Image 1 (cartoon, rainbow, N blue to C red):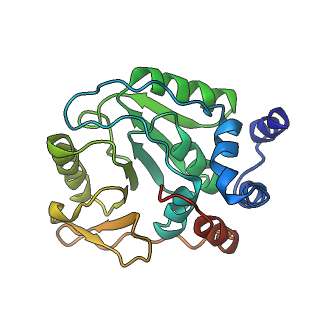
Image 2 (tube, one colour):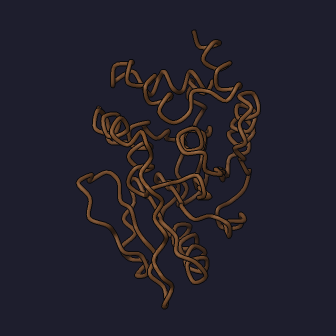
Length: 232
């Protein structure tokens, strides 16, 4: 079954509504395992010390990813960057759901290499960069996603980099497990989801970001986003 599904992805299928329809057929508590098996990332890599302020591998839940796509929202003209991308689950899911250009930045070389290999195997135009978010090229991004990849001074340094980008264009920062109010230049949107915070940049006189229209699969996406059994 998984081989057939991967073949569909390689041929350009299982995108958008088709991906959500497949997920809807799977019990909510089994969706993440099924999606990770589809991608070939269904084993947990060994944890290793990464230094102060840097967190280990933690895969995001598909419900949280769908909620992010709906609430940001993310459209096909966006450039989506996942900081701390691990094995690539978030970036690949966002690309499959929206068609947006997607990229992951991951400090652990083995995880970035494996994510790159999985995207290549599935014939997906999703890039994975081995590198530090403090140094990686982020200038083209319009939407950033962070699931507690770092804290402390590392987080402060990354937020300073994002503010420089926000001085040139409006951006959206989507955060799981992080409180970014202290940045001062981000405005959090009202949300009913305590586990996901979405912030809009407000720097200078820049106009707000042009919001893409909701996807045709928004209603089905809401169902997937609500049927979750874990915060992330």
